[in-house]
Length: 196
View (tube, rainbow, N blue to C red):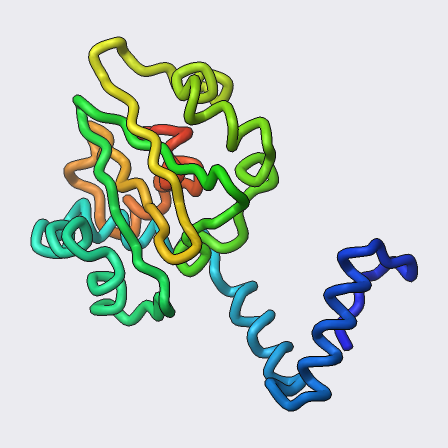
């Protein structure tokens, strides 16, 4: 059984181990299956989402497919999205998008890995829907008054990904170079992609 480094378990860790052991005992999956899934989860990083964003910036047809059906577009380039429905919202010179999960911590993990702690915090989850500009400012993102802010709420079966605005001055950059500019926070919408 997988254990944490501390010998003292809190309530939730003990419950997790008990449920895992029961499911293994009942034959729903093996310990090897569980280890393989944990290893697969650890390979999911923001770099995957950054590559998707960069491709959309350089490939207009892919961008159109991505906005129309994010799940199908990602699967067309070999990404396994599982049962998740991916909605892609594009930030422009007129609209800035930001994502949240107001109930828990639903997050496009297939493209960005584990959500940051602040994303899961009650502070972020409750405030970004009420005062998005104030929250964005705390991240260093100050938007002109003429740009409207739209907040999108992830759900158990639907996740959002922000397609950030491509920064000016990056026209000669390759897809790989562009991907290095894209951050997890820009795909959540609390940051803007900056030119180098």
